[in-house]
Image (tube, rainbow, N blue to C red; front, top):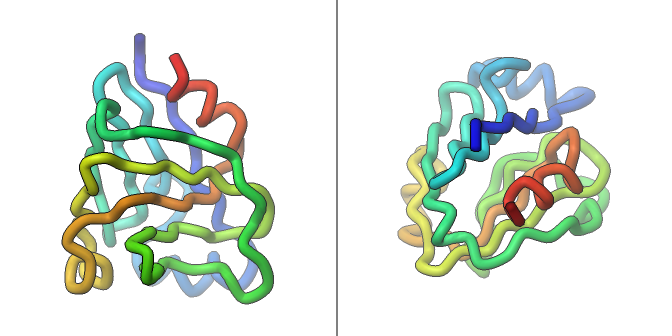
Length: 129
């Protein structure tokens, strides 16, 4: 299996704000490979997650108004949500350490990742293979 790339969606005013952090097309994506997925979000984060740690991948509705941004939720979910529309929720066991400053300062082990991608159903299908 070769790597399959899924662009992280970043739209509207958040696109301009996130450009400061190197977020633009070509630097913001998930690469699904045979053994891991690589998460890249500008120069802020570059993360490799073993596929064996992903316990589920589901398409979920956009979390709602004012819910765009990079953040960490109290239940140790990392958000990389840059646009309205369906997102993908990846759950991990064991929890995964994310290496970008706002997250790594507060979360030692993320239990899930919520991410907005151009093709949510395609990402879930790629992870099911």
